[in-house]
Length: 255
Image (cartoon, rainbow, N blue to C red; front, side, top):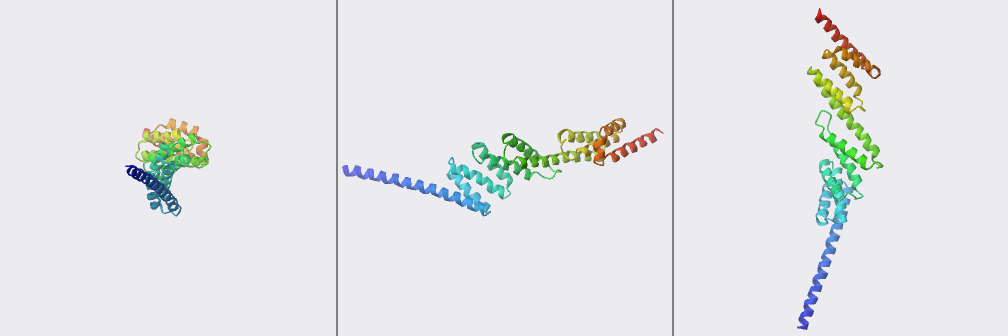
Protein backbone atom coordinates (compact mmCIF):
# COMPACT_ATOMS: atom_id res chain seq x y z
CA UNK A 1 0.00 0.00 0.00
CA UNK A 2 2.83 2.36 0.88
CA UNK A 3 4.43 1.70 -2.51
CA UNK A 4 1.05 2.39 -4.19
CA UNK A 5 0.75 5.84 -2.57
CA UNK A 6 4.35 6.63 -3.47
CA UNK A 7 3.57 5.81 -7.11
CA UNK A 8 0.47 8.05 -7.01
CA UNK A 9 2.50 10.95 -5.60
CA UNK A 10 5.19 10.40 -8.23
CA UNK A 11 2.55 10.41 -10.99
CA UNK A 12 1.03 13.70 -9.78
CA UNK A 13 4.49 15.27 -9.58
CA UNK A 14 5.21 14.27 -13.15
CA UNK A 15 1.87 15.72 -14.30
CA UNK A 16 2.59 19.05 -12.55
CA UNK A 17 6.05 19.25 -14.10
CA UNK A 18 4.60 18.38 -17.49
CA UNK A 19 1.92 21.10 -17.25
CA UNK A 20 4.48 23.63 -16.10
CA UNK A 21 6.76 22.74 -18.97
CA UNK A 22 3.85 22.97 -21.42
CA UNK A 23 2.89 26.43 -20.13
CA UNK A 24 6.45 27.67 -20.51
CA UNK A 25 6.57 26.27 -24.00
CA UNK A 26 3.26 28.00 -24.86
CA UNK A 27 4.44 31.34 -23.49
CA UNK A 28 7.65 31.02 -25.46
CA UNK A 29 5.60 30.28 -28.57
CA UNK A 30 3.60 33.50 -28.06
CA UNK A 31 6.84 35.44 -27.64
CA UNK A 32 8.12 33.96 -30.87
CA UNK A 33 4.90 34.83 -32.68
CA UNK A 34 5.10 38.40 -31.39
CA UNK A 35 8.69 38.79 -32.54
CA UNK A 36 7.75 37.26 -35.89
CA UNK A 37 4.98 39.81 -36.20
CA UNK A 38 7.36 42.69 -35.48
CA UNK A 39 9.83 41.31 -38.01
CA UNK A 40 7.16 40.97 -40.69
CA UNK A 41 5.88 44.45 -39.94
CA UNK A 42 9.38 45.87 -40.36
CA UNK A 43 9.82 43.95 -43.63
CA UNK A 44 6.45 45.29 -44.87
CA UNK A 45 4.98 41.80 -44.95
CA UNK A 46 1.75 43.14 -43.55
CA UNK A 47 -0.55 40.18 -44.10
CA UNK A 48 1.87 37.86 -42.31
CA UNK A 49 2.22 40.39 -39.51
CA UNK A 50 -1.56 40.55 -39.16
CA UNK A 51 -1.72 36.75 -38.89
CA UNK A 52 1.04 36.69 -36.23
CA UNK A 53 -0.45 39.43 -34.07
CA UNK A 54 -3.95 37.96 -34.31
CA UNK A 55 -2.64 34.64 -32.95
CA UNK A 56 -0.86 36.45 -30.11
CA UNK A 57 -4.06 38.30 -29.22
CA UNK A 58 -6.09 35.08 -29.18
CA UNK A 59 -3.57 33.14 -27.11
CA UNK A 60 -2.37 35.95 -24.89
CA UNK A 61 -5.63 37.76 -24.18
CA UNK A 62 -5.31 39.94 -21.08
CA UNK A 63 -1.52 39.73 -20.99
CA UNK A 64 0.84 42.62 -21.65
CA UNK A 65 1.99 40.88 -24.80
CA UNK A 66 -1.58 40.47 -26.02
CA UNK A 67 -2.27 44.16 -25.40
CA UNK A 68 0.84 45.22 -27.30
CA UNK A 69 -0.09 42.87 -30.15
CA UNK A 70 -3.43 44.69 -30.50
CA UNK A 71 -1.61 47.94 -31.21
CA UNK A 72 0.74 46.35 -33.73
CA UNK A 73 -2.14 44.58 -35.42
CA UNK A 74 -3.73 47.99 -35.96
CA UNK A 75 -0.37 49.26 -37.23
CA UNK A 76 -0.12 46.44 -39.75
CA UNK A 77 -3.54 47.38 -41.12
CA UNK A 78 -2.65 51.07 -41.17
CA UNK A 79 0.65 50.57 -43.00
CA UNK A 80 -1.10 48.31 -45.49
CA UNK A 81 -3.53 51.17 -46.20
CA UNK A 82 -6.47 49.24 -44.76
CA UNK A 83 -7.54 52.29 -42.83
CA UNK A 84 -11.03 51.32 -41.73
CA UNK A 85 -9.76 48.01 -40.37
CA UNK A 86 -6.98 49.90 -38.60
CA UNK A 87 -9.50 52.25 -37.02
CA UNK A 88 -11.40 49.26 -35.63
CA UNK A 89 -8.31 47.82 -33.94
CA UNK A 90 -7.09 51.19 -32.65
CA UNK A 91 -10.57 51.74 -31.19
CA UNK A 92 -10.38 48.43 -29.34
CA UNK A 93 -7.05 49.49 -27.85
CA UNK A 94 -8.28 52.89 -26.68
CA UNK A 95 -11.46 51.42 -25.18
CA UNK A 96 -9.80 48.52 -23.36
CA UNK A 97 -6.52 50.11 -22.35
CA UNK A 98 -6.97 53.84 -21.90
CA UNK A 99 -3.68 54.12 -20.01
CA UNK A 100 -1.61 52.16 -22.50
CA UNK A 101 1.59 53.91 -23.69
CA UNK A 102 0.21 53.37 -27.20
CA UNK A 103 -3.07 55.22 -26.59
CA UNK A 104 -1.96 58.68 -27.72
CA UNK A 105 -0.45 57.34 -30.91
CA UNK A 106 -3.54 55.18 -31.55
CA UNK A 107 -5.87 58.15 -31.04
CA UNK A 108 -3.89 60.22 -33.53
CA UNK A 109 -3.78 57.41 -36.07
CA UNK A 110 -7.58 57.15 -35.89
CA UNK A 111 -7.76 60.83 -36.85
CA UNK A 112 -5.29 60.34 -39.66
CA UNK A 113 -7.08 57.27 -40.98
CA UNK A 114 -10.40 59.10 -41.19
CA UNK A 115 -8.64 62.03 -42.85
CA UNK A 116 -7.06 59.75 -45.46
CA UNK A 117 -10.45 58.15 -46.14
CA UNK A 118 -12.00 61.60 -46.60
CA UNK A 119 -13.00 61.84 -50.29
CA UNK A 120 -13.03 64.74 -52.75
CA UNK A 121 -15.34 67.59 -51.76
CA UNK A 122 -18.10 66.60 -54.21
CA UNK A 123 -18.63 63.23 -52.47
CA UNK A 124 -20.30 62.47 -49.15
CA UNK A 125 -18.23 64.00 -46.34
CA UNK A 126 -19.06 61.63 -43.47
CA UNK A 127 -15.42 60.62 -42.99
CA UNK A 128 -14.34 64.26 -43.19
CA UNK A 129 -16.74 65.16 -40.40
CA UNK A 130 -15.55 62.20 -38.32
CA UNK A 131 -11.93 63.22 -38.85
CA UNK A 132 -12.63 66.79 -37.75
CA UNK A 133 -14.45 65.55 -34.66
CA UNK A 134 -11.66 63.14 -33.73
CA UNK A 135 -8.91 65.70 -34.30
CA UNK A 136 -10.67 68.16 -32.01
CA UNK A 137 -11.11 65.51 -29.31
CA UNK A 138 -7.44 64.61 -29.66
CA UNK A 139 -6.33 68.22 -29.24
CA UNK A 140 -8.58 68.61 -26.20
CA UNK A 141 -7.11 65.49 -24.56
CA UNK A 142 -3.48 65.94 -25.67
CA UNK A 143 -2.82 69.71 -25.94
CA UNK A 144 0.94 69.18 -25.57
CA UNK A 145 1.25 66.26 -27.98
CA UNK A 146 4.02 66.13 -30.56
CA UNK A 147 1.22 65.70 -33.10
CA UNK A 148 -0.48 69.05 -32.39
CA UNK A 149 0.94 70.92 -35.40
CA UNK A 150 0.11 68.08 -37.75
CA UNK A 151 -3.42 67.86 -36.34
CA UNK A 152 -4.00 71.60 -36.77
CA UNK A 153 -2.77 71.48 -40.36
CA UNK A 154 -5.08 68.56 -41.13
CA UNK A 155 -8.02 70.35 -39.54
CA UNK A 156 -7.34 73.38 -41.75
CA UNK A 157 -7.29 71.24 -44.91
CA UNK A 158 -10.47 69.40 -43.96
CA UNK A 159 -12.30 72.64 -43.15
CA UNK A 160 -11.28 73.99 -46.56
CA UNK A 161 -12.87 70.94 -48.14
CA UNK A 162 -16.09 71.30 -46.16
CA UNK A 163 -16.30 75.01 -46.98
CA UNK A 164 -15.77 74.30 -50.67
CA UNK A 165 -18.53 71.67 -50.64
CA UNK A 166 -21.03 74.18 -49.23
CA UNK A 167 -19.90 76.84 -51.69
CA UNK A 168 -20.29 74.50 -54.66
CA UNK A 169 -23.76 73.59 -53.40
CA UNK A 170 -24.55 77.31 -53.58
CA UNK A 171 -23.21 77.49 -57.13
CA UNK A 172 -25.41 74.53 -58.10
CA UNK A 173 -28.47 76.31 -56.72
CA UNK A 174 -27.48 79.40 -58.70
CA UNK A 175 -27.43 77.35 -61.92
CA UNK A 176 -30.86 75.98 -61.02
CA UNK A 177 -32.03 79.57 -60.46
CA UNK A 178 -32.93 78.76 -56.85
CA UNK A 179 -31.40 81.93 -55.52
CA UNK A 180 -32.77 81.85 -51.98
CA UNK A 181 -31.27 78.38 -51.45
CA UNK A 182 -28.01 79.57 -52.99
CA UNK A 183 -27.87 82.52 -50.62
CA UNK A 184 -28.46 80.18 -47.68
CA UNK A 185 -25.54 77.94 -48.74
CA UNK A 186 -23.19 80.90 -49.14
CA UNK A 187 -24.17 82.24 -45.73
CA UNK A 188 -23.48 78.83 -44.18
CA UNK A 189 -19.95 79.02 -45.55
CA UNK A 190 -19.48 82.29 -43.67
CA UNK A 191 -21.09 80.92 -40.51
CA UNK A 192 -19.32 77.56 -40.26
CA UNK A 193 -16.14 77.94 -42.33
CA UNK A 194 -15.26 81.59 -41.75
CA UNK A 195 -11.54 80.81 -41.61
CA UNK A 196 -11.29 79.19 -45.06
CA UNK A 197 -10.09 80.53 -48.39
CA UNK A 198 -13.53 80.28 -49.99
CA UNK A 199 -15.08 82.93 -47.72
CA UNK A 200 -14.77 85.86 -50.11
CA UNK A 201 -16.14 83.81 -53.00
CA UNK A 202 -19.12 83.09 -50.77
CA UNK A 203 -19.55 86.81 -50.11
CA UNK A 204 -19.59 87.45 -53.84
CA UNK A 205 -22.06 84.58 -54.19
CA UNK A 206 -24.41 86.28 -51.73
CA UNK A 207 -24.32 89.49 -53.80
CA UNK A 208 -25.05 87.57 -56.99
CA UNK A 209 -27.89 85.60 -55.36
CA UNK A 210 -29.47 88.79 -54.04
CA UNK A 211 -29.14 90.52 -57.40
CA UNK A 212 -30.59 87.60 -59.34
CA UNK A 213 -33.53 87.40 -56.97
CA UNK A 214 -34.04 91.13 -57.77
CA UNK A 215 -33.34 92.28 -54.23
CA UNK A 216 -31.18 95.04 -55.62
CA UNK A 217 -31.08 97.25 -52.52
CA UNK A 218 -29.95 94.32 -50.38
CA UNK A 219 -27.34 93.37 -52.99
CA UNK A 220 -25.91 96.91 -53.11
CA UNK A 221 -25.83 97.16 -49.30
CA UNK A 222 -24.01 93.82 -48.94
CA UNK A 223 -21.59 94.74 -51.72
CA UNK A 224 -20.71 98.01 -50.03
CA UNK A 225 -20.27 96.34 -46.63
CA UNK A 226 -17.73 93.92 -48.12
CA UNK A 227 -16.13 96.21 -50.69
CA UNK A 228 -12.58 96.05 -49.31
CA UNK A 229 -12.34 92.28 -49.00
CA UNK A 230 -13.96 91.72 -52.40
CA UNK A 231 -11.62 94.19 -54.07
CA UNK A 232 -8.62 92.54 -52.41
CA UNK A 233 -9.48 89.25 -54.10
CA UNK A 234 -10.62 90.78 -57.41
CA UNK A 235 -14.23 89.77 -56.84
CA UNK A 236 -15.79 93.21 -56.53
CA UNK A 237 -16.18 94.24 -60.17
CA UNK A 238 -17.98 91.08 -61.29
CA UNK A 239 -20.46 91.45 -58.44
CA UNK A 240 -21.04 95.14 -59.17
CA UNK A 241 -21.44 94.48 -62.90
CA UNK A 242 -24.06 91.84 -62.16
CA UNK A 243 -26.04 94.31 -60.07
CA UNK A 244 -25.84 96.87 -62.88
CA UNK A 245 -26.99 94.31 -65.44
CA UNK A 246 -30.02 93.34 -63.34
CA UNK A 247 -30.82 97.00 -62.70
CA UNK A 248 -30.76 97.74 -66.43
CA UNK A 249 -32.99 94.74 -67.08
CA UNK A 250 -35.51 95.93 -64.48
CA UNK A 251 -35.53 99.42 -65.96
CA UNK A 252 -36.27 98.03 -69.42
CA UNK A 253 -39.11 95.94 -68.00
CA UNK A 254 -40.67 99.08 -66.52
CA UNK A 255 -40.56 100.77 -69.90
